[in-house]
Length: 71
Image (cartoon, rainbow, N blue to C red; front, side):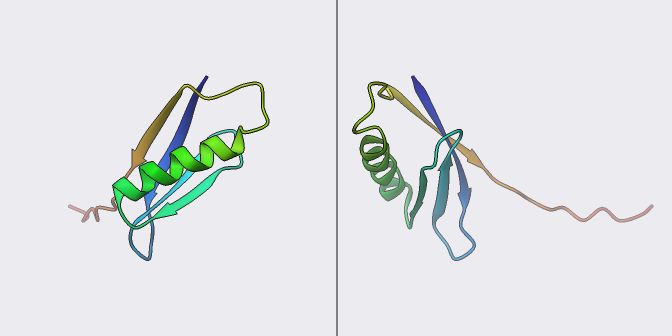
């Protein structure tokens, strides 16, 4: 099973991530910390489950607003 996390920049700095289709939410100050927290949370979330995630995808989404001036 592949588990996909949507990762965004946190307003206060760092990153926040949520697993699509599962109740897993993570916050971290650095990308390395985010990776470690995602693996730990995934392990704990599926601890008592017969189904285990074999692959975790971090899908980084960056929103950018660009003002468009009328011509």
